Image (cartoon, rainbow, N blue to C red; front, side):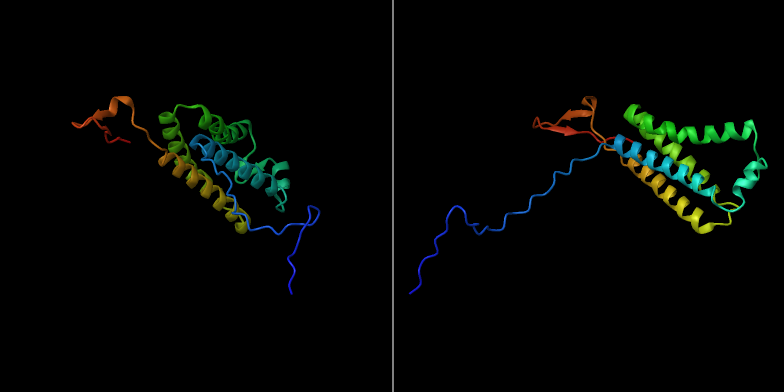
Length: 175
């Protein structure tokens, strides 16, 4: 004869499988995506430049007053700073500019930086190193272009019209 199994409060109870709880995946605002992408791009620019110092002959060239094919001068340094200041400033501009201006600015600046980034491969002997850096930078620029291009739109109150049956209808938006 089988006796019933009695458990006490001190014995572990058999647990049933609990439903999995999914994490709350909040949508990320476009401004934050853009600022994060520009920040990542700047980290890549900086680390590629820093790691480039370990390329044989680079430090010797810098000490001799040359970077790539350019003589080190105040003009070179000012140009390099201006060229990098734009993406650096895009981090804060992406978070603060009004949406319409923000979208246009990101589209223009990212588009202009695609050839600037690709130019970095010219004349380099370490193509795997620079190729990876440039590929990652171009992916980030493509993300910036995508985020800005697909920026969600909302209808303003001026574009709201009422249909004959009094339902509110959104008028088509222009880009």
